[in-house]
Figure 1 (cartoon, rainbow, N blue to C red):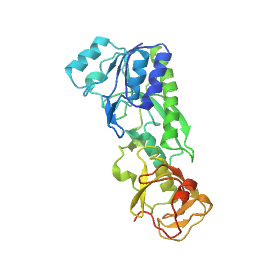
Figure 2: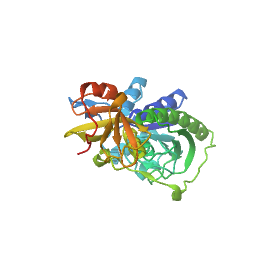
Figure 3: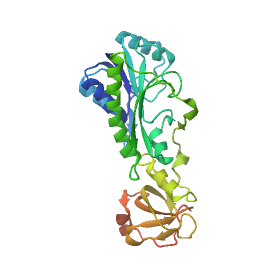
Figure 4: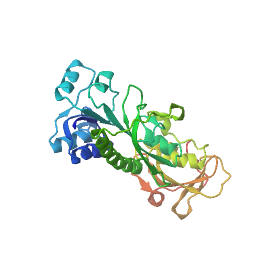
Length: 310
């Protein structure tokens, strides 16, 4: 099939690779413009651009896709299908209706759950036991199109956004390859979503990063893992920002005020929450590196009774 591919971050790279590996003709890749990153604020290309250029595929990076010039470009390519994976912008109806076989999206959730921009983060934050990937025909709604295929994976206690992201990216590529084969054969199903079972995964904001110690240990652990490695969750220690990257549940209850350090024994920083105890196992004090609790305690003296988040 002649395919236009639209995608931007690391998550979208395996899907592009899978399309090429399965001998479809990717006639062009559309991705977001280069953006400044890092301390030097140097312009950095999106991962999909880097991959596409290495494959010799033409790359286009319009600031906006809602122009006559861009529509004319798409029409010149005469694609049979457009595949969209984490492109970063909503497609207008003119593009959705352009290819005869439609526009197909790979979404990082088991739709209709977690429609929206941050499905991996919110699945972990909300303590889901399972998530997955879904391919669907795009329509004008927010992730509301008819589903084609889906694949599930369990979320373990050790999972973070980083580990789950990588697993779902690989699963998404496999699922997309199966989906394209069905479309090429004219056998792809259209499974309407049950809107009554839908929930949303909204874009993360700065206020989502702050640890609320009055919440339960389970909720805080999910919150920490659900923001690792981006954007990270934080509390404060003696007026400095203390980022928290990993945590484990600890049996018992210290009976202290939420946010109080109750123990620093055995290389663990154990903190009282609103319900239960939580061991902070990977931390990063403002201006420092990410450290295990053992490494952190070698450089920073903590004593029971210190309160975090004040």
